[in-house]
Length: 74
Image (cartoon, rainbow, N blue to C red; front, top):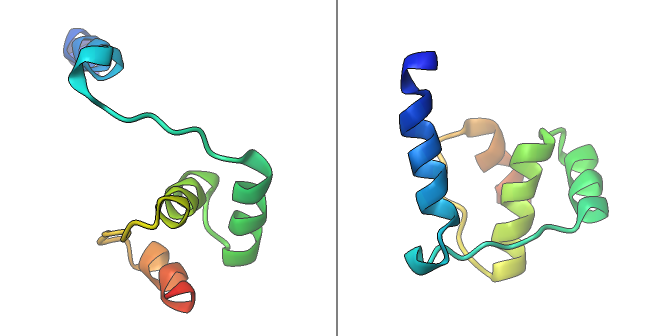
């Protein structure tokens, strides 16, 4: 992992550069915590689910547990 540290740092710099047109969105921590609790998802996966729902976007995933949590919401 240490060998890849320079690559990871360059990628992070690129992602944070405002000229890349990456859209950053903050999640609502309380909403994410409630969603994680209700679905049994990790906070990370609940954040992705919350963000997709708040943007009205489809959540595309190969993660079966996350996909199962999406089904009742569709």
